[in-house]
Amino acid sequence: MNQVTGAPGRRAILSAAIASPALLPAAPSSAAEKKTMAAAAPLHAYVGTFTTAQRKARGEGIGVFRVDPATGSWTHVQTLGEQVNPSFLHLSRDQRFLYAVHGDGDYATAYAVDPASGRIRELNRAATGGKNGVRQAIDPAGRWLVVANYGSGTVAVLPIQPDGMLGDQQQLVELPGKPGPHKVEQAISHPHDVVFDPSGRFVVIPDKGLDRTFVFALDGATGRLSPAGNEGFMQARAGAGPRHMAFHPKRPVAWVLNELDSTATTCRWDARAGTLTPVQTITTLPTNFNGDSTCAEIAVSADGRFVHCSNRGHDSVVSYAADPQTGVLSAIGWTPSQGRGPRYIGLSPDGRFLQAANEQGDNVVTFRVDAKTGKLTPTGQNLACKSPVCIVYAGGGTLPRA
Image 1 (cartoon, helix red, strand yellow):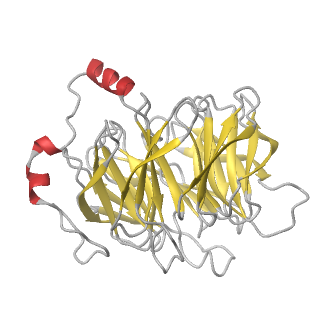
Image 2 (cartoon, helix red, strand yellow; image 1 turned 90 degrees about the vertical axis):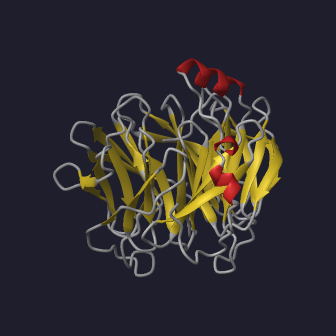
């Protein structure tokens, strides 16, 4: 078992929990069994938070909530404490394991998920080889965890063991390029997202510090990353600060959300070469807003018709309609997030609800999504949650974002 020696807040793990296979979630043995288990599993939401004084945070760890799929309401199940800034979360494709990176830390953590209760327990920790991991993703075969080390400007690949535990990083990739013009936010490379394309062959990594969105090919056998396409990246406008991105579920289209200049860029995606080509850049802010604001998160409807992005400062969610062929965006409207600093927004697995996690507002607010228009309407559900950063779902017959 690989762990980071001296990792902040490290807890001893009971040896019996690791030694006894009976204490790990049982793996479904067939496709039919997997389908049955998924359909029967209750829906749970996992909320990552910031916890440290350095972050001026108030979070207490990872929150687990049971979700009513009819109303979108949440009921608290568990808070797993003694976790330092367990910020961005990711689920294994079979939903048996949850993974977290830790703000300002140099390690990732694996947790076992109980599908019935939704409760989690820590399995192990492993070195990411860099500081302040922000986003991670798992390859289609479930063998590799790719982590963006925001603080040190690197991308790490960690092996995933059959029992869900993590091994220390085995490859560390530095991202080349000239830092953008923002002296504070763009002093060095700052990769901020890790997203596999629909084929699972390529990994896309927006770099806020270098104004580039990198594309890598992942060798599924060895876990090695190599640049894709001619240059291996798409250049953004100077000072744009690419932060997060998402693919259209069916069309060769992708969207990159630019944090620093509050824009969203629509791109053509060449799935053969692994290249992105910009076709449109649009503001995420209304024309009558002149204050300071930055973008944070992007969420795309399952049919690709609507794209939602969060604004921190304007404290809103902008909703766009996407052209069915090109993906080009047109604004539908802006909905107040009902809290300060919506660092995360995300759609429920059935797409009927959107949650806004307001990091500075210490709340998670639920909105109903109109399937025909894409417009958001508050449900009145405003959950107190300290310093929320990320939400992932498990159960209910759905799979998490790749």
